[in-house]
Every structure is written in structure tokens, then in C-alpha cells.
Length: 68
Ligand SMILES: [Zn+2]
Image (tube, rainbow, N blue to C red; front, side):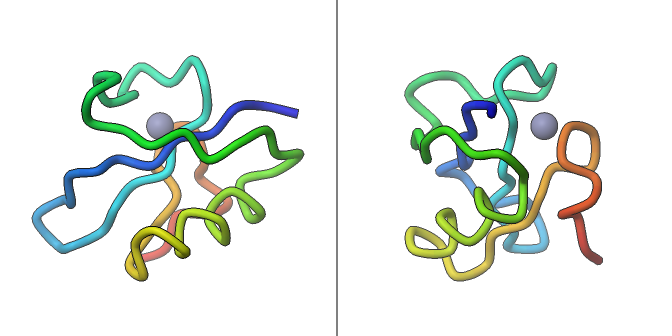
């Protein structure tokens, strides 16, 4: 299990990136929403989509969930 967060700020393409605890690209605390503890990034992205319809896994820490 790992803690996952979603970035409150969208990327240039509109994606809100989902990051796993420890990622070097983790947004600052004021710029992220804690999603919860998940066994994989797929569950984390599903939860993130409740906040932002256009959520996407971080290329670096959640590559299996990164699309586009
Ligand atoms: Zn990341």
C-alpha cells in the first residue's frame, strides 16, 4: 500500500497528475489533495477522478496509470 495524492493544479494539457508518496515531483502540500492508501495506482486514479474528471497517473511514479 502507498499514499497517493492528486495535484490541484492541472498540467498544460488539463491533466491532474496522481502521485505516489515519495515521488520527486510531488506537489507542495498546499497544491495537493490526499486521496488515501491504495495497493495500486489504478485505484488511486479512480479516486482522483472523483475530484478531477481529467486525472492521470504521473509518468515517473505511476507509469502503469499514465496515458497519453
Ligand atoms: Zn509522481
